[in-house]
Structures are given as C-alpha cells and as structure tokens.
Length: 148
Image 1: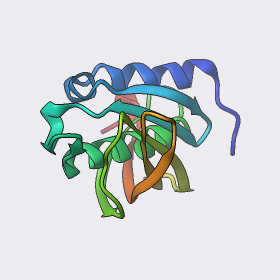
Image 2: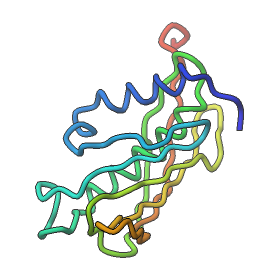
Image 3: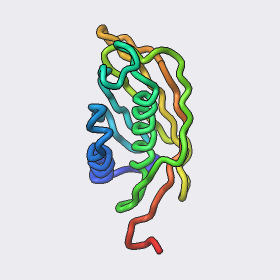
C-alpha cells in the first residue's frame, strides 16, 4: 500500500463522521490507515428487528462505511469517493454489545476501487463472531477544481 499522510486519514474520518447516518448509528473509527479501516457501532434497539438483533441495514451500513473509508484513504488530496454498489452476505445474527467492521481495499483503480469488509458481532465478554461479509466498489471522484 502507498504511504498515507495523517491529513488524508483525518479527511476520511471527518467526512464519514459528518454524515447524519454515521452519527445516528453511533459509528466510530477504531483504526484508519492506508487501505484499511475498522469501525464500530453499538447494538441499539432503535436499529434492531427484535431485541438485541441488529437489522441488516445497520450491518450493511457498518460494512459499507468500513470498506469505502478504507478506499478513501488511498485517494489524492481533495478527491472523494462514493459507494457504487455492494453485496452483503449475512452469516450469523448480529447480536451482542457492538459490531466491528474491518474494511480493506481489494484493488485500487483510478476511477473505481474494489473494497471489502468483514463484520463481527462482539459479545459482552469480547467474543467475536463473524456475522457478515461485504464486497463493494467505490467511485473515485477527482478534486472539484479538476472536474469538467
């Protein structure tokens, strides 16, 4: 992976954390570096389909944020990215105290970046259970001053 400056990392963190859905989910970054991002969201009843079981949309959001944020760390200064598509495979119930999504870049292209994430349900005792896997792509958008 190419080297990434702290300002690139902070730009990605600030961009994600300024989004209302990230705030509503209680999303926070655990780790953010070149081509990788780990995010956490608490299991909240307001995002659950039954007590203690997060609904798939919240799981998808955690995975998407982790994967696309990882892709964002590799962009040049001033560039941004946006999700183009994503596929989530649910493997186990998203139960416990919180979710951790570990995102990574699969292939960084000039226009599109393929990215992935694994999502783990974390119990009160810290036990992690893989509950979903995500594969997606992000469109890389050049800085505004260079766009026609």
